[in-house]
Figure 1 (cartoon, helix red, strand yellow):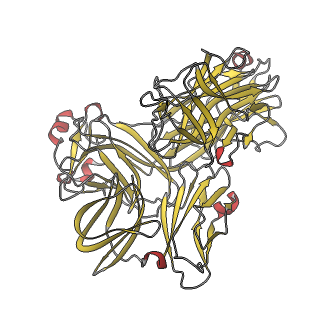
Figure 2: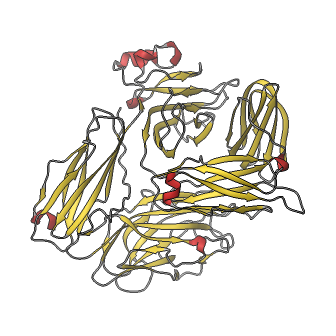
Figure 3: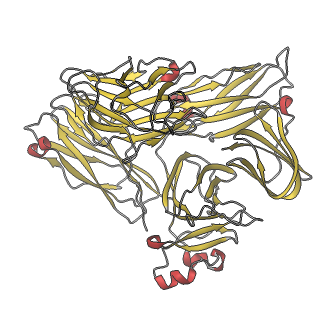
Length: 639
């Protein structure tokens, strides 16, 4: 089955035509960054005011609180297991006179305080019909939602993006509500929702402006296939002039038949059809340009043609053969005859799996002796790439384990505990590896581990990313004083400068590059840290946080001082990764393993061989494995 991703990415096109007035559509219109310890927006476009005085409406006896915390978060605390229209925090959003505002998407970085009685959130855009906040306000749209239920507030800092249920246009004040529900009613242990940043996307327009879909990502489409999308177009307040339509496509991958939108249709609002038909691998970009008089708006068109697309039903169409292949080993079949992309490597515990309408997939059956895995052929992953696949656990029984890990070479880029036996789409983007990398899907070394994977696609991505992995370790020696640590970094497709922070200001460390500009980062630069041995006290390790630039995931760099941990260079091959509550180590020869916390304390020291799961608290660790052939050092993250 061919699956097509249809997402909307935000692209601001403000400088393409210097002599015309361009109305940018569905762009960033406001942002709050609460790490500044201020409620004043760090950015907002002209024509709308996002309030700096957050309020609380509460006509009940139960508490509801909204305030900036000392550690730089907007804290929302409240009572109740459900959202109440009688108590909520709020942000006023006021268009300037004559302006029309639409909020189409909200991006939030947030989490719940560890151990708090916190469950879900749901945010509305309220219309108070000209008045101040009140009970039972009129709902214009939902800004943060999950179908008909609230969004589960994540336990760790996570960035999430939510499309408004309705692209509601307004020209008078609206209020965004802030509520966090409890797991159980408790007037003392209130819900505790912490928000690091809020971004609002949409548009601010005047009569006569053109409004069109800001951008369309056609997703992941194979050569020879065609995907159609509709671009909405309308002139605010109506027009008596036709709107011209021009496709600007240097890649010859897109097609649009329409060249004019008549005035009557532009006034009422209509759709223009565009197709994506890639003929080569890679990323493709084009623009649909709408012009009326001196008004111009650009719809960005993007699409990716995957470098790998493996649907395990592709060559097998006979359902009787499906039944025969079900639950037989993958290695019993000739890849050339049954796979779109031969060259995969399957462990003996990987089987064909028949899954209803999806047809054949693969099943990773773990054993006590071996973790089941399926590895792709070598791929050129030297430019930003994304990965999409479907996964599930084989059955809904609680005794069946659904933990799945995805590795690029030896680095874990994604993990999930599949909750049920429904094949669900998973997407991860923004990674870079080497021209000869492999992606490996790994289950657990456990007889009850049974995970199904299907419809695997690897494709170029348009998302901002860095050459840094999510977590990395830089080892250095402090024998010379002082020492400057250079960390090479190259960025792709950034939206803003990159910020670097040094956690906790540990003794001896000085950050020399707190900011990398877009130009420097995309040209290739270094993050620099100066280390000078303290005159008093012990030498310690340090951690850097790299953020900004539009990155959806922060990068963390652990600086490991030889003097603090006694670590040495890596020369040994072993599979090491973190899972929920443990470190997993797989190695043939008997070896010693030491695990260090980031402050240099040794928390594990034991012998291992074969497959091992070492129980440990969640967090970041440095693992050192030593045997007669050498040493391996690796940073791991335990959930």
